[in-house]
Each structure stands twice: as C-alpha cells, then as structure tokens.
Image 1 (cartoon, rainbow, N blue to C red):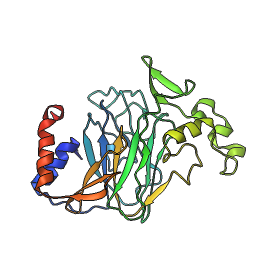
Image 2: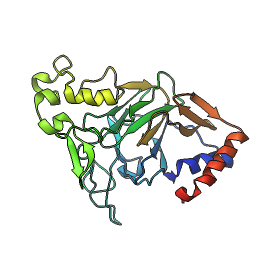
Image 3: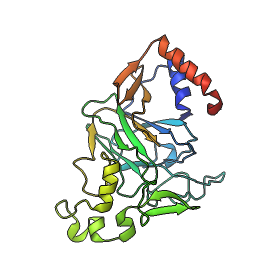
Length: 285
C-alpha cells in the first residue's frame, strides 16, 4: 500500500522513471475532502485488511485480484476515533468499531460497487443512503467506461425525515427503506420485482441530483456500467469536471470531462506539476 498526496504521487511518477508492470486491476482511492476519512473496503484481503485512513488530499493505490467478488464495495467512514489498536467508533458507516472492516457496516453511506471479470460491472449506489459525494472513473479500459457517481452533496437538501444529524449538522441522508421499512420502499414482498417496484418521491429526489447513481433497488438501466480491462479511480468528495490521474502502461494518464483520456508526457507537464507541488508544499506537509 502506497499513501501519498495525489499531487506528490503524480510528480514522483513523472520524475522518477519508475517502471510499473501492468496489473489485472489497480484501484486508486483519493480523498478530495477537507477532512480525514477512513474508507472501508469489502472484501478487504487485498486492501489493507478492509480499512485505511486518508488525510485530506491523500490517495492510496491497491492491486485488486482478478475476480474480486460480487458486490465488492468501497465506502467512506467519517469522524472516526480509532485507538492505537485500530478500535473505535465512526459517525457514518461504522463497520463494528474497527478500522479494518469484515462486513459492510451500518447505513447510511454512498457505495462504490464492483464486480471484476472479463467484463467489469461497476456503479455508485445510494440505495443505502448517502454520506459523501463519490465518483468512479475507469482508466485505460475498453468499452463505454463512463465516469459515474454522485458529485452533489445530498446532505444540503436532505428531507428532514431522512436526515442524520450530529451537533446540529446533517452528516448523512438515510434511504426511505431504512427510515420507513415498508415493502414499497424496500422493493420486497409484492414489490420485489422490477414491474412492481418503481421509483418514488425520495428515490426520484436522489436520482435528480445524481443521474448516474443507483437510487432504488431496480434502478439498473441507468445506473450500472461496464468496462473491460480498466483500472479504477475512486474519489471521495468528487466534483464535476474534476481531472483524475493515474499511471498506466508507463504513461501518466489524465481523464476529465473536457478532454477525455489523454497521456500526459513531456517536460512541460513535469515543470507544471513541479510548480504546483511547490505552491502546495505547505498543505502536503
């Protein structure tokens, strides 16, 4: 596991001449939030046991095994208080008061979900509620390979009946199923199929703010995406038009909405990133 500021990580890759071998799947998890977060990952055998700490604007890179299991998930935990043994509570998506998660944990939380195979399936789900904006960006893959997720902060306009508060501040937004626990909202019983389980007021509110995210259990047609042979960048507190960087096939690769997927090579980019690094040196240290 490598833990670096994304800017420092990028600069070092450009300047060091490191040769990396192409892996089956590389996951770059980025904390773009203003506060420390503790992402949880299941299954976590190849991901530091299922939990990590990321300070603001830090990132971590993992290699995931091929065939990582169905509904593998990555999510944010906030305001955690872990002791030296990695034990302690979190305000959102606590997975048993431990840094390294062995289970999905408590709702609500925004989830990045993956099934890795010859054809990968990936999505960002709000079915279990929302706690932080998150996006998933495939890099260097084949197929549609769209960037998906929820860049809007649903906490700002969360309906009062769904809001989770701490110290008078909304820290998460629960799902209607979690709050009301009815077959209609939870897509179960007579509502347990795509014909009878339809979007309702709360899921429509989520969908309007985050069109490429799962808003309810059968929201498949507009919410699940595919890509082949890609690496993935998961960004917490993501924003629209935000460029993401990773290192692929001996090239620094950038993807953003305006420019698509481009290799960044040459001394000009190295000089620019060096200038940015020096400018932001105080925040990195």
